[in-house]
Amino acid sequence: MRQFFGMSQNGNLREAVHGLSSPRLILLMSNSRQFETHVKELEALYPHVPSIGCIGMSYDTSVVEDGVGVVAFLDNVDVAVNILEQVSVMPIKYIKRLELDLERIKGSEKDTVCIDFCSGNDACVLTTIHTALRKQKISLVGGTGADGKISANGRVYEDGVAYALVKNLGGRVQVYKENIYHPMGKYRFIASNTDKANYMIGALNGKPAKQVYQSILKISEQEILTQTFKNPFGKLNGNETCIISIKEVSGNSLSCFRQVNDSDVLILLELGNYHQTVRETIQRICHDFPQRSAVFSVNCLFRYKLFCKDGYMQNYLKEMSTLGSHAGLVGYGEHYNNQFINQSMSCVVFE
Image 1 (tube, rainbow, N blue to C red):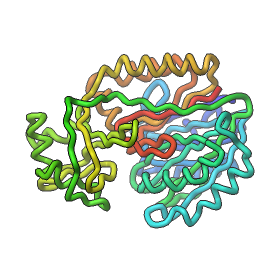
Image 2 (image 1 turned 120 degrees about the horizontal axis):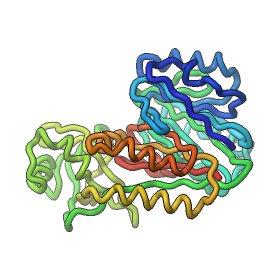
Image 3 (image 1 turned 180 degrees about the vertical axis):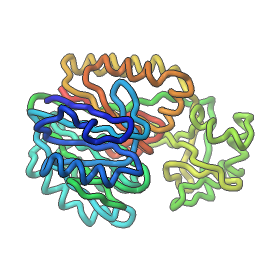
Image 4 (image 1 turned 90 degrees about the horizontal axis):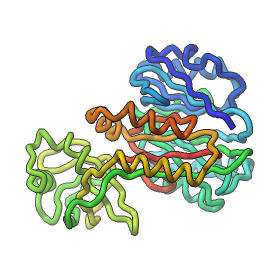
């Protein structure tokens, strides 16, 4: 297969797709002002070509912050695109669509991946999708777009998840995730007074969550929202640690980007040597895939902000480009199989 990436920093879709012919699948990443217009225009330019889209920044060797980016897969792939609706209340209602698409694709864990763009309620959505994907051990990579809107096959939806099943007819596929954090000290917290609907943590070990976070890190309330770039929480899930970013301060509570429940065990994380972690990820991919046709990744918005603040973002994209054709989305939450993760990178590699 081949991967195409085109962009326009000023949101000119025709400029972004210049040179794109005979795509098998298109991934659209647009800005909030032009998203719906771009969805319609893309369908007019490439009628009946499967597509999914969301509002968000995109990149290959540089970042498109407020324009439009297009990723397309060409040659030697089989694709099925669809949507699960009402994801905030009942995504399982539409799971038959995915089951039928899986039957048609006839994919396997070795050659097929599911790429999704979601409008929200990610944890529930991924659990739902996994009930179908796990039967054939098919992996998933994706992310959340902005403003609660996504698109599939030329139509804009709210409260939905758009997915693309991609079968590589010329080789293997494999998904990866990258965590640049590790536990800080031996801190362990039991969460309480949580508000699941608003992803709120009221107390940690019986004390106000905001005060606990400030006291350990010796920071002011105004510093909390930037400190989470270096010190997010982690939720223990077996051998896995799910990163939980702080979204905002609400009184003495902390609102997060991922749901926390009463009695959940949390730890405090700290930023590691992410330069080395990125190099190790690239080395691992090269070891697993000596020949690569494409890499599609989803990087967290907070990772993007951290890398920009440290002057590393451009170097990061340059390093990832050594893998070959690399492009992706800056998401508001990253998806890796059935996990909804924060402040991370997930990607799929095509042989």
